[in-house]
Image 1 (cartoon, one colour):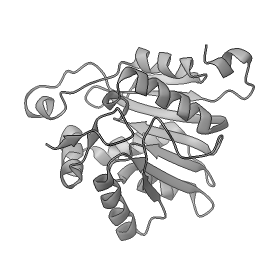
Image 2 (cartoon, helix red, strand yellow; image 1 turned 30 degrees about the horizontal axis):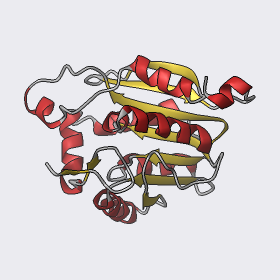
Image 3 (spheres, rainbow, N blue to C red; image 1 turned 135 degrees about the vertical axis):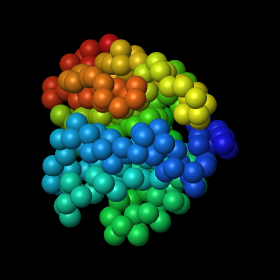
Image 4 (cartoon, helix red, strand yellow; image 1 turned 45 degrees about the vertical axis):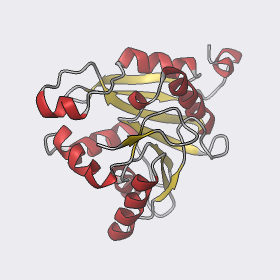
Length: 219
């Protein structure tokens, strides 16, 4: 399994795009489509929404999201791995999906303030060191529109055994830690819980409609 840290990020970068979809299938016991549907339901996507998928991997979730936002919406996926982005572009072209993919890092998003209605981060936060994770959360807050929301999904404390534990032994982020992360960035948590699949948990947080000085400072 090839793992590299790309220039411009302190996070772990996965470059094994050719095996990524197979690993996702193994980790979900063949329920990857069900997982995507559950994540998209949490986001309450609407026609015309502008979506960002951070750490998009090979683009499967972003491609699925294009079906929810229609011709007036837009879906952008970013990943620090050029190999992942290349595969995501090939998959989008094959599916006829208008998702746009580009190489970028989670802690320095190349987008203007208040650009997106929804931001996804799926199985990505545990790849980031604490300070980088905090910077990522601040960047998510910055690019979210007022009232926009982030849907974060990640592994809780490992309960896996055997081969899958070996493949995904390098981290987890507890729900409480995700909540604290987003609250510190100035977002407001609205929903949390288990996804009902392996040890995956979710947090949904939104950008407040009225920003107080405390929200702006991330306190």
